[in-house]
Length: 381
Image (tube, rainbow, N blue to C red; front, side, top):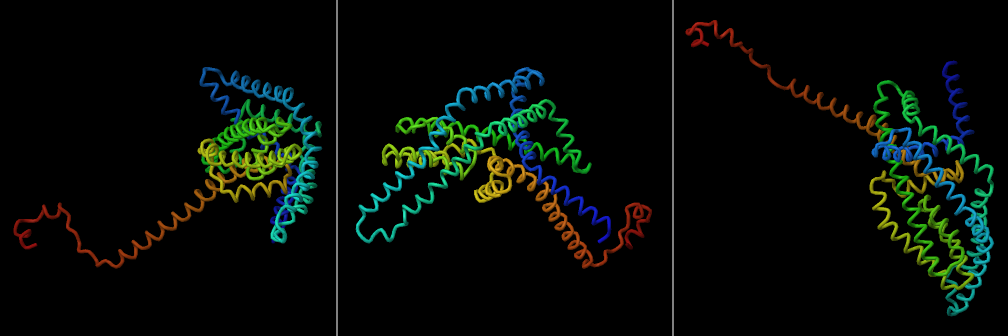
């Protein structure tokens, strides 16, 4: 391998290392792109009412900032208070579950407990795990300075992207070869539509699940309704993993009141998730890119391992964008076209072989030559 190839390989390795070191910043930039894409759809909707783009952008940004201020002022303080209480009550609830499991095991006929798993050991192992998960989740929100800086960065980038999206879009398209730039613009449009649909769908899911869970917990008389409802709504943004995690705190808290409440909460959350899967998801997600469940779960695991908690939240939009680019740029533009060209070549080759098998055709006399001949010559012919 020549010197030029070694230099190119070294430059590629350095570029990959730099990208890996700034992966958290890149994720925040991607989050800003997702938010800007969703807000740009809102701006386009406002422009249909006669507003110019500058006024529509100002209205959209004002709505976003107002919603964030109201959320921080009205919901975050009681949520933090209840969440701190939740961290203290969950271990006590798991201890109560262990005692209840021992009582239920003593009520079983003799000898039947050998066919059942050791519930006490399961609860003993689940208690530090649940406490660690809740503590880590709270640590994300307790580090106010880091969270504030990340939110400000995403907010500023979102506003910048929203003010003049075409300039950034054209700059990204310019990275492609000239013959492929129009196609890249089409793929970006598909990504934009899919991301907007995903944001709308996930917001509807979060609001519905949060309201339904909070109402049901309030009817059952489970304490800390606001914290549990917000957890159910926020964790709804994480498919598969989020709903499972959201059911642990209300069950643990309900065990402190009565065992039947814990069972009722478990049944309630199972019913809510089933109704969501069969009623809400088909209605809301019908226009989204279809993602296989195994791909969704594996993407969440991989993003959580390599990018942390923020990667877990952004796993689905990353998969949506990646799936569109793979389908359009690789499958349709390369693989399908390669197959089409190969079929056309085989057809032409087969047609040429068949033509070679045909007998040599007799010479054809043109009509002008026939017109110059006399009637006797025509008769002889």
